[in-house]
Length: 282
Ligand SMILES: Nc1ncnc2c1ncn2[C@@H]1O[C@H](COP(=O)(O)OP(=O)(O)OP(=O)(O)O)[C@@H](O)[C@H]1O
Image (cartoon, rainbow, N blue to C red):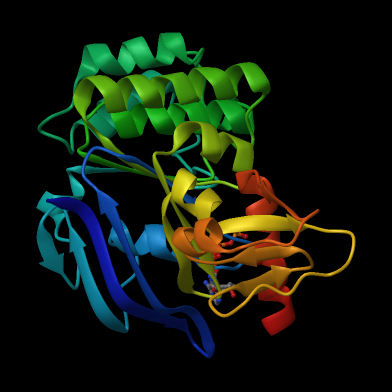
């Protein structure tokens, strides 16, 4: 079973088409990195999977259920951390734990306390008096304590310092390894995505441009280094300058002239090459 399936999903905010036929699959138990430029449609997708938005058209399947609207029972199996978590500002972490926990039959109070300790979140400070990064960590503890099967994270580490980021990511990896939780997270930190995610999706203007393992993407997209320009044959698509995309078999079978070197690229280089094609077409 896949944890998430989106098939040709369209969503408009008035005249703005935020999702334009988005299709992607997140497999059960995997860590899936969701990449895309500002405004590409990542938050819209994650909100839709949490049931905060509804698709105009297309099909959504979450944890094996095909849904138009995510019912409350299904929501209880999903954890969600948004970009800027907003809690009742007068509540402390402990009070929020008691409040949020009352909505979940699976709430694990000792686990919530353990997460607060590990993530260095003070139990008795009001949410309004916490820094933005501490609020994000509190958001993660609140999302993890009900032991969700699917965890949706929208740029979770954007406001965290390097130590907190490491603690946060370590917790995600433990969770995935020990509890088999499916994690789908968006991030602009391409290096972090490369390190954490088993598979990635790159979204551009509301549609998925690539979905798969980073190693697959790196086999498809490479740089052709040559003194004079080289135009590879049919089946190669130029992404930017000397960066081309083709089926991995084509790269292996092509006979390159002497002096030409085919170099592999980091995920960041590949993402930047895709991003450039986006701005050209925009
Ligand atoms: N409430 C809204 N009303 C109108 N348009 C919106 C609204 N929310 C998002 N949009 C538009 O929908 C598109 C997708 O936005 P979305 O927030 O999903 O992108 P994103 O990939 O999460 O961006 P970022 O990386 O900046 O968070 C953008 O064009 C955005 O301006």
